[in-house]
Amino acid sequence: MHSYLRSVGFSNIKTRKDLEQILDMVMSQPTEKYVTSEKNNYVLAELFKNFSDRFGIAVRGEYDEKGVFHLEHYYPYFKGQQVSIKEDLAINKRVDTDAYTGMCDDLRLGVSLIFYLQNVIDYIDCVEKNSWSGRAVSVMLSGLSTEGKILLGTSKDSTTESNIKTDNKQRTQLLAEAKKGNQEAIDSLTIDDIDLYAMVSKRIRYEDIYSIVDSTFIPYGSESDNYTVISNILEVRRLQNELTNEYIYNLVVECNDIVLEVCINEKDLLGTPEPGRRFKGNIWLQGMATFVE
Image (cartoon, rainbow, N blue to C red):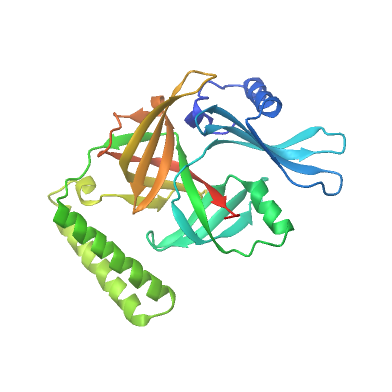
């Protein structure tokens, strides 16, 4: 049973029979359907079934020569609407299942960003047409969460916000230079990290850690596309699963200057989300890449 089904309103699925009924509905009444061209008497297919605005369950598999669909993989999804990043993208197939992950280096984070790829058929079509070379593409990121809490926001005046933006821009430029091997940039980043550690060590004696750390984006657990985030809430929508009637929060958040959307069951969120407050939780990061501009 997929642990993130509850994130899209299926918290009451307890047995394999319950799951198969839902999957049968997805396969027989898909909202969207994507297929590849026929190859060796089979056709790869991806079927999406929306149970509210932009979230639901997807199945991936193949049609045989008789037109019978064979399920290989399923997953809950939530599709983002805003472009979060535009970077050179590497796509890798996972060894344990019929799924793909995307990876790129985003200088705003300073680490490689890995996400679960939603539109696999688009990628396969590009590969078959020899039109994919790992170029820079736009990616709309989203996250599913099974546990989260709301924190109060941090108070900053216009001068402080301006200084933060300037510092972030300078750090991004230094990271870009360090990536090219510029030793001066590497030394400057090292000194900045030492100064930051000293500042935090001094302030943490008298302040709460969440008043010092505004946002975080940290890998979580053994899965490469899972992250722990603290993010600023920009927008809040309350959606309802049309089949189960469970309520889902759609949070548009900003984390380390990256905007993405998080989907979480109302039952799993502690606190009331509002713009200006912060979301803290673990997310499974998904993304839809624009392979054809």
